[in-house]
Image (cartoon, rainbow, N blue to C red; front, side, top):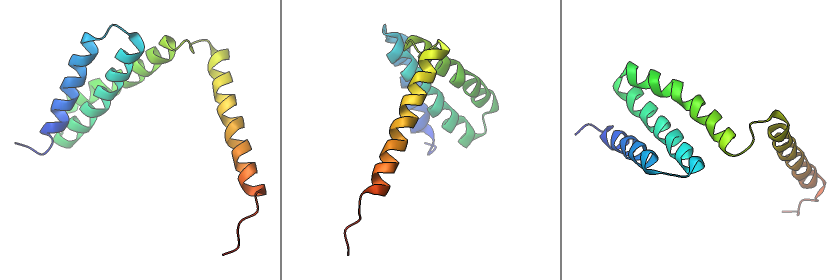
Length: 103
């Protein structure tokens, strides 16, 4: 048994799980996970056709996940990005303004 075989079995199991799913968001998440596992498997074993396929499918599944989440119109996606950025900046400012305890 090659050390990469468990990665290949996990990738295959995720594909099977994706085919069995009815919920589109969960299906896309499983498909993205399988793409990542297949990329790791194929790159470790030098299987170019497999890694090329999953490298192409990964952004496609990512885009379809964005659509399934309802973030496919640019305004909603940009609002989510702005919210996250604003929250991160506020947390950083709060951390800088909080006095550190003396050691």
